Length: 134
Figure 1 (tube, one colour):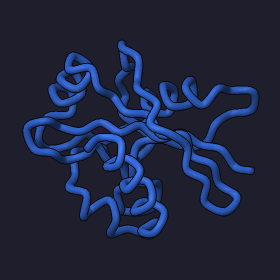
Figure 2 (cartoon, one colour):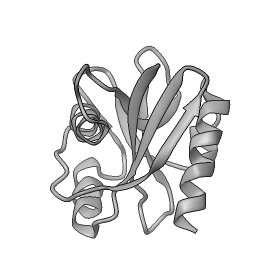
Figure 3 (tube, one colour):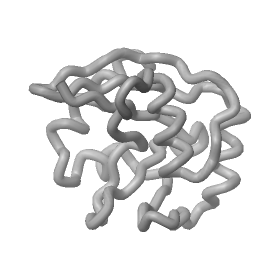
Figure 4 (cartoon, rainbow, N blue to C red):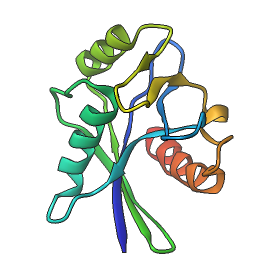
């Protein structure tokens, strides 16, 4: 089974979620990616966030749950600590940020997260997120 981790970070002022483009696309998805061999899902979430966003989270993330979709298992983590949220908002700024890998990172509305090539997958993830946050 393929395993990955995603990180959910919401801008409390706009309600938008931090998204990142996938290489070769202009579509946004949640920040995250594949877990390395022998890597804990929690560690994968921290690593992927640092690789894609370019900033290291300094507080723990809350584990929201695991989604299984066919042969894919995704661990979902939520950044709750206001200092981490503020650091990311300040670092990215309002215009977004291009990362050296060609990934663009910015806060996007949920409608933009579900408009790309992974629509069904992202809808399932967002459903899990809303169930835990409401």
